Image 1: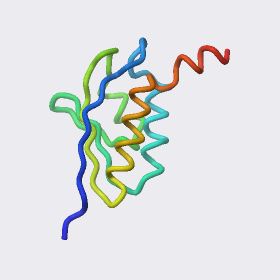
Image 2: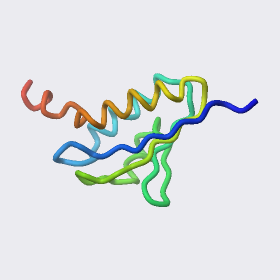
Image 3: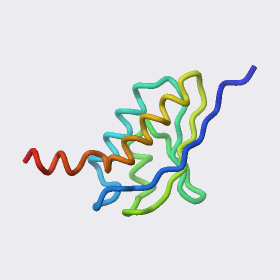
Length: 98
């Protein structure tokens, strides 16, 4: 029996794109799940738990990515990551806190 698989399309919703802070948040959140999670942009793939691999993808505001996950908590992982993308990586909250 194969592991459950899930995919989700997300858009970079913050104004500054994928730089080190949001990428670190993605990797940290993805690492909380046992599923194998990849972020796909065009023909490039990156392990969502690796900051260095995610940095290689780049990502401008409004760009779309596909999240793919495989494992027993795949759907929960993608739901959490999709919420993080949709929330603009909470950058407005971080800016307000400064």
